[in-house]
View: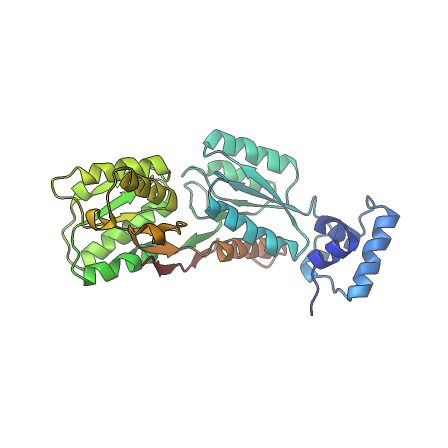
Length: 329
C-alpha cells in the first residue's frame, strides 16, 4: 500500500502542510514536531512525492479556490475533488466565496495573492477575466473551472455541456416530441451558453423549427425557474417537454408545479442539467444530466499541479469531462 502525505499527517497529528514543510526542512517547524513527523514517515515507509520535493522555494504550499457561492452542491463537490488531489502532494486549499459579485471576486483574488498562494483554481463570477492577469504577473498559475472568461486565457476544465444537453433530449425527439421548452441561464456564462447551444443543435439536426416563444432566459436560481416555467404554462399551447438548465431552476420549476397542484400527467415533462434530490419520487422529471463534479475537481487540480511542477508548459489546455444521462423514471 502506498501511503500519502495525508496518511502521514493523520498519524502524526499535524496538517498536510506541516508534513510538507518538514520534508522541505522548513526552519519554522519545531524540532519536536519535525521528529514526530519523521518518525511516522519511517514507520509507514512513506516515499515523498517528487512534486512535493520540488516545492522548496514555494511561498506557502497553499492553493486558493474561488467560487461564486457555496450553497451550491456543485461548487462544493468540485472543491472536495480539488482538495483530495492536492492533499496527496502536500498542498492545502484555501476557499473563498465571491458571492456572485465581480467586485468581491477581485477583492478575494487580491486577498489570496496577498496570502502568497502558489496557485489558483477559480469558478468565475462573470465573463470578465482581465483581473486574473495579476496572478500570472506574480507567477501564480490559474485554472478556470465550469466557465471561461474574456480577456484571459488559462487551463480550464468544463463539463461537456453541449453533448450532455443533446443526449438528454434526443430520446424524446425520437419518441416524436416536437414542442420543447427551454429554461436557460445567463448567456454570458459559458455553461449556460453551451447548454443552449446543445439545445439549438439538436433542433437543427432533427429539423425541428425553432420557436422563440418556447425559450426563456433567467439565471441559475430557483426563483428564475419558477417564474420562467410559469410563463411557458400560460402560453396558448404549452410545451410538451421542458429542458431546465440547472438544478436550482429545476427546483423552482418543480415547486411551482406542486404549488399549482398539477399532477405529473397534467404538466409538461421535465428534463434538466444536474441532479435534483427527490426528483424521481415527485414524478415530474423524466431524465437528468449528472455532472461528475469530483472528477472535474481532480482534473483541475491535476492541471494546477503540472503547472507548479513545471510540466505543463505551452498553450492553455481545455479538458471536457463527460456527463452522464440518468433516468428519473
